[in-house]
Amino acid sequence: MITTIIFDIGNVLADFTWREHYERFGFDEDMIERLADATVRCPLWNEYDRGVMTYEELFQGFVDNDPEIEPQLREAFADVSTMVVRNDYAIPWIHALQDKGYRCLYLSNFSERAHKECAAALDFIPHMDGGILSYQEKIIKPMPEIYQLLIDRYGLVPQECVFLDDTQRNLDAAEKFGIHTIHFENQAQAIEALKKLGVEA
Image (cartoon, rainbow, N blue to C red):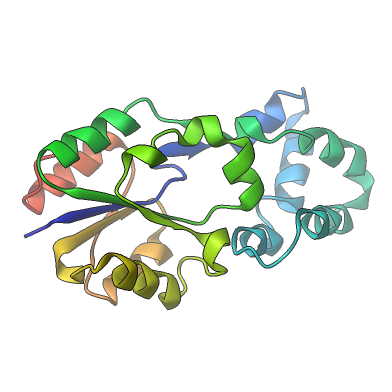
């Protein structure tokens, strides 16, 4: 029996809209690709999510990745509040599950700056029953330690949990603990997958 629903945040409860963020500045496709390669697609992004480097160190790493586009990097990262957009279904879905007796937790790779500047898009967090943001614990998915921490902190029985994430490697790591998983594509698909586990979502 499932008692706990664990949600990833990015591209599940909220969308990680980095491309749309870059498009707002009028950059052409070639520049958007260069910006992505220097930033969201580089390993430093995950390290910042892990909370083991400062924003200044992160940004210098972006510049080092592609020095020619430093002005565009500075422009794009002066304000990152539009990089995360909350999905309209997030709060109603959480409440619907809670009304049926399920506990709703979050488990997300998230940086300190995004947590602060994208706070408006994360207004569902106070409605949830707890969770973990990676930067606060200095560990990220798919590191086994982050799943163990969630299990220990909330007294979870892994076999009674289901984890929704859009990244397969994060799901694979959760499955090693006995947690049920759903590869999230959209809400309708996830609801159907939850029903197969006996969850009326």
